[in-house]
Image 1 (cartoon, rainbow, N blue to C red):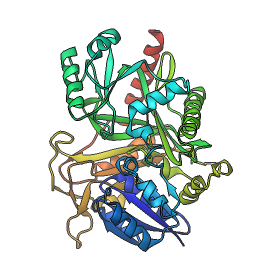
Image 2: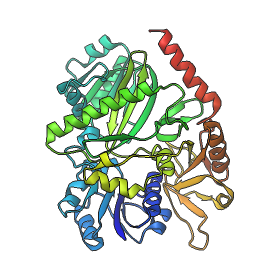
Image 3: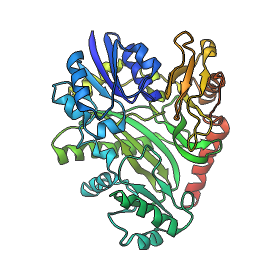
Amino acid sequence: MKKVLLVALGSTARADCLAHAIHKSHDSELHSFIQSKNPSVMHLSKSHQIGKLDDFSAIKKYAKQVKPDLAIISPDYAIAIGVADILSELNIPVFAPKKSLARLESSKSFTRRLLEKYQIAGSPEHKVFESLEGIRDYMLYLKDFVVKPDGLTGGKGVKVFGEHMKTIDEAVDYCTEIFSSKGIVVIEEKLIGEEFSIQFFTDGKVCLPSPIVQDHKRAFDGDLGPNTGGMGSYSSSNHLLPFLTKEHLQDAQHITNKVAFALKEEFHEYFCGIMYGGFMLTADGVKLIEYNARFGDPEIMNILPILKNDFVEVCEAATQGRLDKIKLIFEEKATVVKYAVPEGYPENPKKGEVIDISEFANTTAKYYLGAVEEFDSHYPWKLKMGTSRAIATVGIANTVEEAEAIAEHSVRMIRGPVFHRKDIGTKELLQRRVDHMAQVRLKK
């Protein structure tokens, strides 16, 4: 049996999805180093250890005990601080980039400058600032803009003028707040269009795309409320989206191929892992919003359940630089993910509330546990929630409409003080996306 070490937060459904994919592999044995308890990940693991992801000595000690044949690192923080580097020092093949290469996600200014240096198309108009000098003038010049802190923000640090900041003074104040913590600010033009994401499996030489996914960040139906880590997502059976064509996929692929090459030129090492591109289709074509250096959450749950390849074998091939020998195959199915979250999420979530998932025995949907813990070992279907996204349900079917019905039916089976977005994957919401894109093109 191949021993696979999973390094994860634990309190995310992404970790549970990865654990299931590893466990499903025909000859793999899962061992997990997780920062917090996850009943499902712990159940699927041959062994597990709870510890902080920045405790390098504990991770190394556990890795030496397990002697894994492969390590997979899940969260952005662990990748950004160099967990891949310390495991590589133990001669463990790692499916995740090293700290230097992970700057692709951990530093937005680095990525914009990389695209500039290697003349890669796709960036919006932007400037990088390390002080307030010139910021107000640039905001006035752009008129519509976005303020981005340079580092990791859990998907919640980006603020859009006109939505999160009503005046230039508020925008400057936000930049002052970022600078006060020794931060760097990227100011970008506000792109108008529809967002989509592609998670590329890469060994640094070949970038293999997975089905395109659209995430929903806003907390409430109708894209209202504060931003979250992601309330749900969907993908289509043709692996595109209703407003996208194969040519748009090729454009995103072209950008990613060039970025992978630029990283090799810059660091003389190959990026191994997931290059998750967040793109926007605009009237002027495909633009790059940002890259992440790991799987998305919830987007991972749209792709791994329909991956027909052995997941561990694909990751191994990437660490060995032979992804050119792999043909990724995904079922021609649509998927819809819906997250159940504690009441009050994301700004004032209730903590420690108990939910009951006993009715999941009657669902055809897949589900993955996030920020929950076992409440009572005698009642495994009762779970105690933390303050973040609790459980993700995944509907898989021939059409998005059918997959949405499965996910919605399943998430409604959770008993307790939770809520979810009911509109994700619905026919009405998808049509609004298509109509919006049509309006964007007309205005050009």
